[in-house]
Amino acid sequence: MDYKATKKNPQWKWIKRWLDLAEHYASWSKDPSTKVGAVIVDDKNRLVSIGYNGMPQGLKNEDSYLNDRELKYKTIIHAEINALIFAQKTHADLSKCTLYTFPFLPCSNCMSIFLQSGIKTFITLKNDSERWKDSFEISRNLALDMNDVSVMEVEWYD
Ligand SMILES: [Zn+2]
Image (spheres, rainbow, N blue to C red):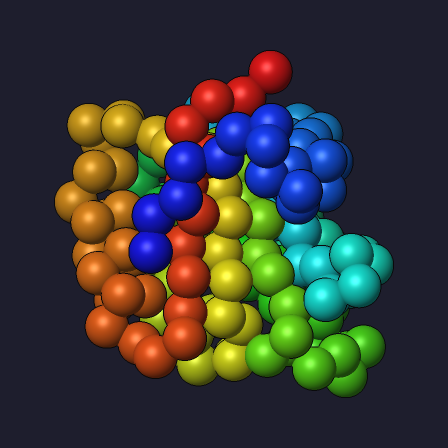
């Protein structure tokens, strides 16, 4: 499902708040090129978990990984996965939760993992980046091939 978010949507206030938080949290990432934030929220709009992309905590030579593109892609933990790892510790019922991501949809691997986690609602910004287009397309189709899963890509944002 694709929704066009408008200010008429009664959920808009919350959608904006959580996307703003995901944007803010993304800025904490030390990745020099791509900063991503992920926020997991329950059905009462309470924060369950939050994450940004980065290397495992405690890595001694973090910068040498972050500054080597090839190596970084093979080792970095995506924001969504960091949020999921912490969410598991809270024992929240993820089937009632929503995943907000900034600035784009989860990649196809993260989407697969999140569908397995039971999350049914995904909200993000619409992003037409050529670089990630193929991965987003797979993520979107994967979600649409599931029962009761919705994906909202907000078309504007201020
Ligand atoms: Zn990912």
